[in-house]
Length: 229
Image (cartoon, rainbow, N blue to C red):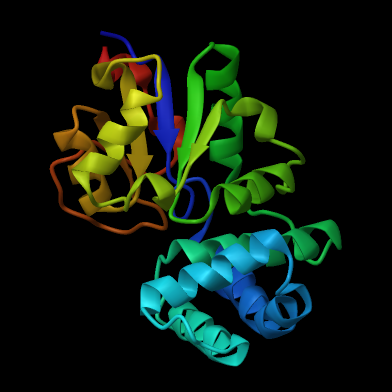
C-alpha cells in the first residue's frame, strides 16, 4: 500500500538540534520570569501556572516558585506540556520581533514542498507545543511553510516514545497506519511508531553513525516513498 501521509518530527529531523538548544531554549529561559509575572492573570498563562502546580502537587506554590520550577525543567530538558506551552508563547515575541527565524534544512523544505505537490498529507508530531511548531514553520528561514501541513500534534496526545501516542494520532487521521510514514532521528520514537503499525524512517544527519533496524536517510532527498509501496 502506498504512502499517503507523512508524520514528521522537528528537532534533528526537519530542523537542527542546535537551533532549538542554542537559540530557542536560551531565549525562553531568559524571558520566562518576566513573561510569567507580566501575564500571570491572562487565561492562557494562568492555565499553565495551574498545570505546574498540579504536576508538582503543590496548589499553594507562589508565582516565584512556579517560575523556579519551570526554569529547572528547561535546564533538565523536561518535556512538560505546561512548560512547552509557555515557551511557545514566549517564542511568539522573538519571531514577531525578528530576533530569529525558524531553522529548517534546505532538503526538508524542498521535499516537503514536493510531497505537498504530490498530494501527500503532511503532519507534524513534536515534543514542542503545537504553537511552537506553527511558529518554527510560520517564521521559517524560507518564509511561511504552514500551508504545507494539515495538522500538528504535541505531547497532549502522549509522549513520543509511547505506542499509545501514535495510536491516538492515527485515530484522527483519515489513513491506515500502513499508509503513514513517520520521520524522526530518535530510535525509541520510531520503535513506538512501528509498534503502532506506521512505516518509519530514521534521519541520521551530520555524518553520525547509528545502528538500528529502521531504514535510514541522511537528509530528506534520500527518502524514496516508493520504497514503502
